[in-house]
Image (cartoon, rainbow, N blue to C red; front, side):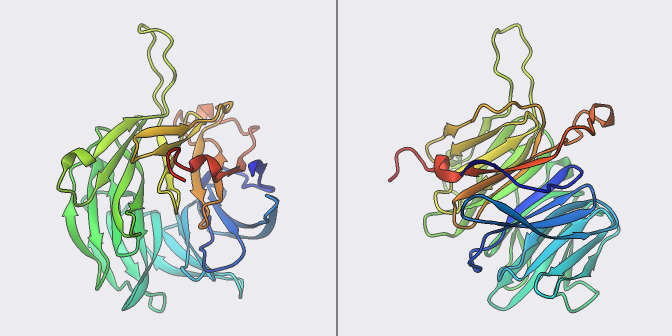
Length: 339
């Protein structure tokens, strides 16, 4: 699968892409946008995309996630609410409320409880059990939440002033550590990676300064942690200034634990964090930023969205440019030295 275009993309900038979990046999893709909508497509083995449904909020949707069983989708919006989309009943109901736009949303499933975690620009992290209008718990954050990820018992939350918090979700969400940022500029995206036993062990953090940090939560050797530059223009001469672009999203391959980064330069790259090497960076036109990406649960498809990310302000927005979502073969994410 190389360069299949998804039909009927959103009408405005695409904020989030997420594939359905492995618990369901088909492959579905959801995409959220600044046009206040969330769309769902079925992705066939041939690479063909079939539009299934659309739901809307009262303001842009910034993020979404699937329930673990694949029957529901949760959305986070600038209208300060989160909603649950029951795909079988096709019902869309509010499940959460904040005092400011909600930037992140994740479904947590642990042995003794399950809930939805929302992170907001109101500087709180809230946990909802879906049956009650009041949250199970509220954690005060040092600043606005800009990005978060959840995998098994681990949650990573980051935001303004470059704070990084690590939470253990096992019995109830509890902060286990606060990490000093390895990056000098604003954080944009975070993604948890697993060790060989499939336990969450660290995270990749992307910033607006064309740089990604690979950070282990607990490592006896600090040299395991490193940063690397990406999404920067090729310099032809030393006197020429280098264009540096934001890293807008990071996605890990579920099997190889290699990673994809996408940026405001309109390009994506695949990396092997263990070998500390770049695997591939296709030569794309780069005439529109890539705002978000996702790898499907079986590790076969890489999806990315081309749309304006507003990094140059409204005067550079070209409404004639079409938003696009492409599907790309994940074979290139396979590490070179592994069978």
